[in-house]
Image 1: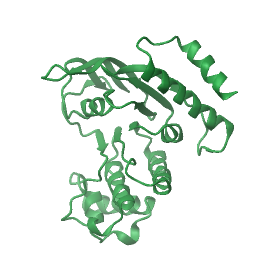
Image 2: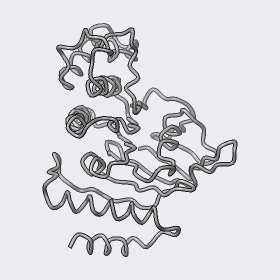
Image 3: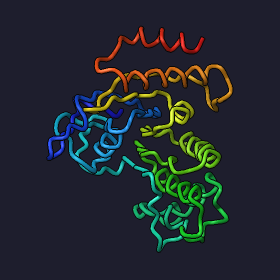
Image 4: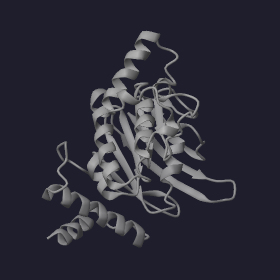
Length: 262
């Protein structure tokens, strides 16, 4: 289990990026962090990844405190960040030096098949489309079998069709090993498509405003009423987070979401 306890972050210039974040993410759960600009979503992800240090509080993975990059935690950024001097297969294999050559080859071949790029194994990153590059980045993260995978808006620069395709590839890889996933997104439909829970954050300073369970069967039907209802619930909470200083009671927000739906 990934646990964030009273986590806060204040920068050297006095900017309070995060204040008293408490969150538990179950093993195998996909959690989407969503909120307006400046609510600290990416800062929170960097703290979990060990790329930055919290000012207060603690991050624990299976009771182990995280204070620096950890081999059990993988991350995919907005940009693919592929190594231009390595071909597609070698980019995916990057980080697998600790396993045998045979196992490395098998893992890479399987990942290439899952993301539909087997025929592109020997190509260079510059020869791929943006969507293909991001598929390689996602495969590279999954191939190490992380316990936790952090996704920092990896689909934000892609068109809607490519984004939907990558959602399917991501879930296909996730189904095999079920790592814990924390996804940062600005896209409400993306959050509802992928996540088991949406955590709505509020800015200045960044803090958790609401948590909404998304109990929808996979694969999720975007045209179905339950999906549309879940989207409206998240949109309502997001709207409140941007327009309210003190949080409203959960029951009141639920009533308002239902009223909007009907």
